[in-house]
Amino acid sequence: MKLDPASYAAVASRAECLATAEEMEAALDRMATELTARLADKDPLVLCVMTGATIVTGQLLPRLDFQLRLDYIHASRYQGQTRGGEIRWHYRPSASIRGEHILILDDILDEGLTLKQIIDACREDGAASLTTAVLVEKEREHACSADVVGIRVPDRYLYGYGLDYKNYFRNARGLFAVADCDR
Image (tube, rainbow, N blue to C red; front, side, top):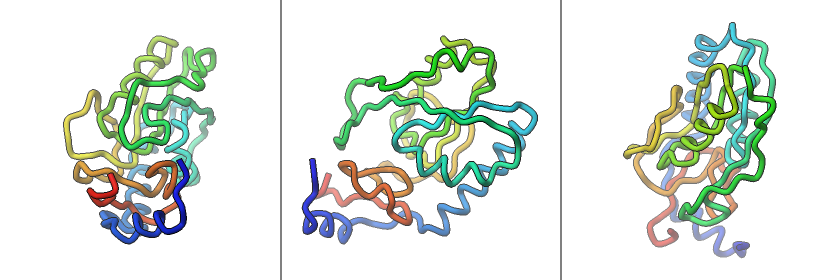
């Protein structure tokens, strides 16, 4: 669903900034420090969870000062909607996971259902170890937890730094909560 320019502007004008770009950059710095301490000696295979984690991955990788390899995994519950449904696998790199130390990078830990299924899939595919990192964690119950979290925020519908609203606003400089009337 495409947003016309007036609707796009209206959503942006009603959104609440929960974290500035500077706060998000500081969160990425903290994540990099923690991930370096955990993984510097592991030569991990980093899996970017598409599409939301592209910005997180692109911002985080230059901060990681150790050898690593990059691939992606694509599983989604939202498909451009504001409510999650059944998980849909678009790409699962099963063969390249066996025996590897895996770092899963995702944009958000919302309910945790997608991340839990990705973790289970990596275990099924024979990962030697798993580390999970999310830029944003909502303050709520989750189906699983992340090992490294950049920032924790209230349970609201969010956009920015990779998180989207109806496939828009992933490039917003900061983290924003959508107004209830736009949900």
